[in-house]
Structure formats: structure tokens, C-alpha cells
Image (cartoon, rainbow, N blue to C red; front, side, top):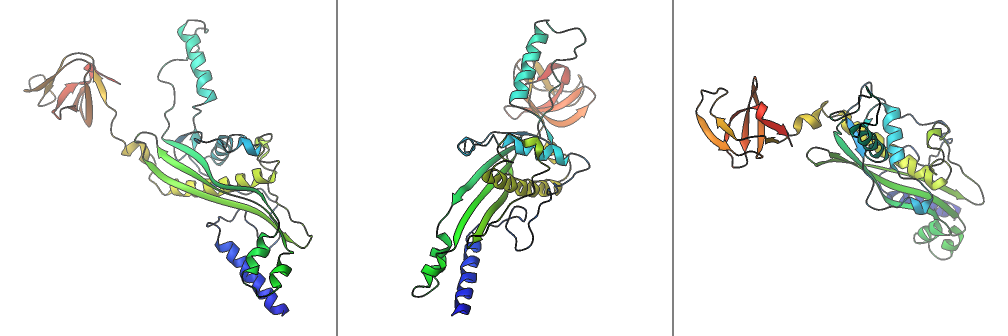
Length: 316
């Protein structure tokens, strides 16, 4: 009978494991000794691209006493050296304030602050959460195991207490130029204490002091969510490493330009070439990428293709 109870418990635990999403290793429970070392982030000798973090549409973190997950993503990106980060929130607002001071003439001479200096993002990174469970306790495991056991054995198994914190998160990678969603990285982690009065633990956070005060290093659910994002970020970097360097910028079409005066499209890169079409001032033209000195080949909004001087067009 004891062998039957042991087998049923094993079957119940296995069923519980199968009911959860595929988990990355870090932050998941192990049978071996607890990992108390800070996990190793992926490392890149050079950045794989430049990204801006976009805040999720719904605020799920405040109710858990946590800060915006943007702080986690920026920390992982900068510490790993894999992604250059541009600040499109508070940092951009402050930069615009400085630009306003510069435009009004209030900044000192030689401040070197002006247009054309903001670094473009190749990607938008959107962190979100699918599920989070700050605490589930009682006889959950007992109820599960009881379904596999006859008679009163369910009541015996129900004496096992389950305390768990678990999270399943997503990081969406979006091309900043085309808005194509390129990849969705997934990560999950959990802390589970299965005991007859025993205890468990969850360590490995001594290296994340930069996030002190965010709630992610001081609460169980914060640590679990942080571990889940760690796994998702690792998945994301592995995807980005498999792509060709600079692919996001290379795949995007050339930005449209606006004509600054009436322009005559010509059949070749010379004033002597025949006139194909005349475009009014302020019209949009779409460079094909073909260049010959100051001449560039363009399409207009009606599908006419010809050559024009780049001196009569400006970025939108």
C-alpha cells in the first residue's frame, strides 16, 4: 500500500508538471541543491541592435508592489552588452526639454545639442505577462493526487501543503521600421515548497542590486517574475544572434522623401534625358536605392519611375 501511495504521488506530481507551460531552466525547481549563484546573462561582444522598451497596455505590476518591467529589460540588455537601449520615456522628455532651451537660446555656446542627434531604434521590445500567481496554497496537490487514488487515500495526500509563486511572461520583438512582429520570446519560473511542514528557498539575486527598490529583488513573486523575464530575455537574444547583423535596417525600404519644388522626373540621371513626368512641390517620392552622383531614382505615388536631383527632396 505504501508503494501504491508513493507511485500515486509521483504520478500526481508528474501530471502537475505537464500541466504547466514549457519552462526554461533558471528559476525552476530542481531536485538538486538550491542555486545560490547569480545566473549568467548571455554576453555579446558587440550589440545586436538598438531597441526601445514599450510599456505594456495594461498595468499588472502595481498591484503586486512592483515597478514597471521596463527596468528589468533595460538592466538585462545593458548588462549583457547585447542590445543598445534608447529611452523613449523619461529620458526623451528631458532631452526635449533641453532641446527647447537650446532653441530659445538659453543654453551655453558650444552645447552641441540639436537636430539629427537622436539614435534610431531598430526594434521595439514589449514585455508582458501571461499568468502570475503570487500565492496558491492548501490542498491543491492533494486534490490532484486524489483523482488518481481510490477510497480514502485522497485525504492522506491532501495533507501535503503547496505554496507557490509562478509566472509566465512574454517579450515581443517588433521591427521599428516596418512594425512587423518578428519574434515572441517566452519565459516561465516558479517557486514551490512541497512539504509536511518543511521549508524551501529561492536564491541567486545578489548580483541584481541595481534593481533594489523595484520590488523584484525583495519579494518572492518579484523574484519569480524577474527569473521568468531572465529566461525570456535569454530566448530573445538567442533568436537575435541567429539573425544577420543589421538585418532590421537592411530589410526596411528606404524612407520616403518630400519634394521641395516642382520636379521633372527624367528617364536617366542627366538633365538631357527625356522628361517622364512632372511632380508638384510637396509630393512624396520613394527612392528605389539607385543613385548616380546627386541623382536618385524614385517612384511617385502614381507609380511613375524616373530620376531626379536629390537637392529637390527632403526627408519627411
